[in-house]
Length: 294
Image (cartoon, rainbow, N blue to C red; front, side, top):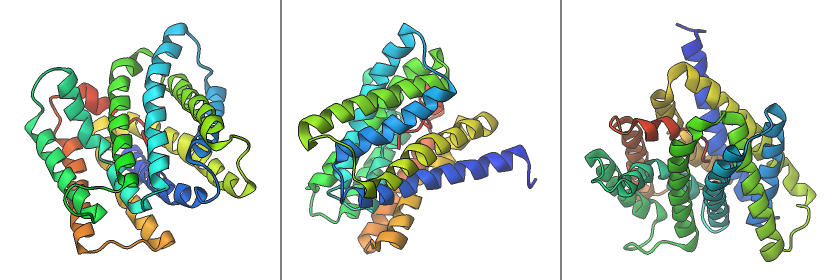
C-alpha cells in the first residue's frame, strides 16, 4: 500500500539507482578539467572521511579484509574513470553494468565448477550487446570500452571479495576502509602519473556530488532499503542503473544511440536482469552483489 515501508524502500532504491546512473554524466564532464586518478582519489577521500565519521573502522582483520577488497575497488574505479575519458557516458554505464553478469562466471571459475546456464547465457547476450552498443566492427573495441570492460571485471572480483569477507564486519566501517584504500592508491597514482595537486575549482561540485550524494547518500539509501526488501529485490531494482546512465547522457550530453545501439542496450539490460534474478543457487553472491560498485 502507498506509504508502506516496502514502497518507501523501493522508491529509495530507485533514487539510489538514479544517483549511481547519473554519476557517469557528472564524471564525464569533470574529466575535461582533471585527471582520472586525481578525481577518483579526492572523490573517495571525501566519502571515506564521511563514513568513518559515522563509524570509525577498528580491528586488524577488518583493515586486512578491507585492504583486499579495496584494491579490487580501486582497480574498478581507476579503470572506469580512465575509460570514461575515452568513451561515451552511455557506453560506460552499460559496460560497467556487466559486472553483474561477470560475477557468477568468475565465482564458478574460482569454485572450479561449470557456471549456471543462465549465467552463461547472460554473458553471451551481454557480449553481443556490447558489440552492438560500441558500434565497432567484429570484436575490436575502442580503448575506452576495453578499459571499462576491465572495470566490470574488477568490480566482479570486488563483489566476490565482499561475499567472502563482508559478513565478518559491520557494513559502514568496512566500506570506509575500502574507500580509504581506493583514495590512497588513487592519490599516489595521481602524483606519479598526473602530477598530483588539488583539483581545480571547477571540479569540486562534481567531487562533492559523487563523494557525498552518491558515495554516501545513495549507499545509505541502498543499505536501508535492502534491509526492508532483501538483497534479491534490491539487485533487480538497482539493475536500472545503466538505464538511468543512458537516459541522463541522452538528456544532458546529447548522446544518441543508433538502432544497433538500442538493440545492444536491450540485450545488456536483459542480461543484467537475468543475472540478478536467476542465480538462486548462488545466494552468497546474490546477497553481496548489490553492495555499491558504481
